[in-house]
Amino acid sequence: MASVVIYSSDWCPFCTRAKQLLSRKGVAFEEINVDGQPALRAEMTRKAGRTSVPQIWIDSTHVGGCDDLYALERAGKLDALLQGTA
Image (tube, rainbow, N blue to C red; front, side):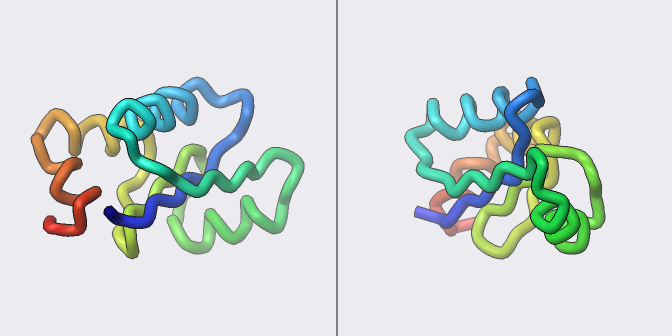
């Protein structure tokens, strides 16, 4: 199983949706909450090139945000990425 990291915020409905999809798939993930953590948000922005949450990585692949995660699911590509076979 791939390593999944999600930068998130408690107040973000898109973060909740992304985490729900991963949880439904039985995927464990590391959540990095950026609320009140300017250094962590800056780290996320530097790595992702985006300031919005969530920002999601599967292994070394930057997936993007919630919409990007769901687009992979709709395209039938998310499971392979999560299994490390994409």
